[in-house]
Length: 349
Image 1 (spheres, one colour):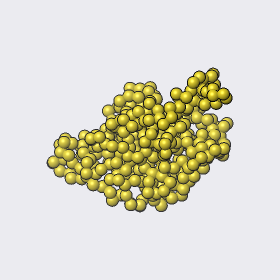
Image 2 (tube, helix red, strand yellow):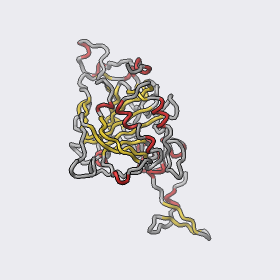
Image 3 (cartoon, helix red, strand yellow):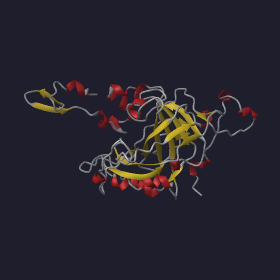
Image 4 (cartoon, helix red, strand yellow):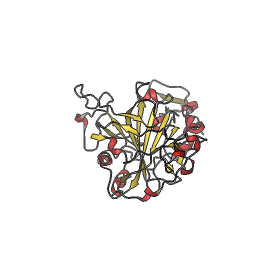
């Protein structure tokens, strides 16, 4: 592998390296965040090699996602239901070139256009001091602190058989929605929290094909035609994060990492034990989103998922008790486990 930085013999004030071999070659400094992908020589297997700051991606022992094996789950009777505030939020759907992401933040309506392209600011939800950003808190579950919602990532495949990052007994779903929050009791923002233990919570909601979509999911997918190309954005109004959650209190939880570089191992994962539904039409529109900009669209953005990572003997706990009785009112060391796969093919009523 070429060490690109070793080739930068000198650098001018534009960040351009020059080599002299009887003629001048300009080599622009690498922007690592734009260089990585989900496949090939810049894909997940190489993230920890192409940038030393991402070494956890290859050497970490608490990486995500994982394959959830029902026979290895530990029943923990002390796990509480996860709680998300009911408040609706406004924000921005954007195509980053790596993923489709929803951020909370104000929308600059003057820059709004049919193709997306409005500007995002983290200073508040409305862009004016008279209507400050709405804060949605995530509490309960395995969490010891209060976490403030930060953003949503959508991972999906170019075919129905793959797409989710987490798998259940080797079974992949067509897509996965991940809600991230940061520990607002210990840290000021997500960028600070992601560097520290117990800094981040990620709630994973698996998406299954169905004839009728989750209505809150439709609020997000309705904007996809406006963010077809990288860098484009579109506003989303009055999204209910609670409404994106399936009708269940059951989940699995483990300690893991961010699923993209730099793979920081500071995330408490909560994987909900029931999917919400996405239609074939919604997946079709998702698969039309491109990695590049309008001038150089590159390939389709789909298949933006990291493969499951080794568990390395981490405990995966659950609050699902399939054997209710006196023997289950004990510690997780009873090594209770469950099997639950009937909802894989369920359709909404």
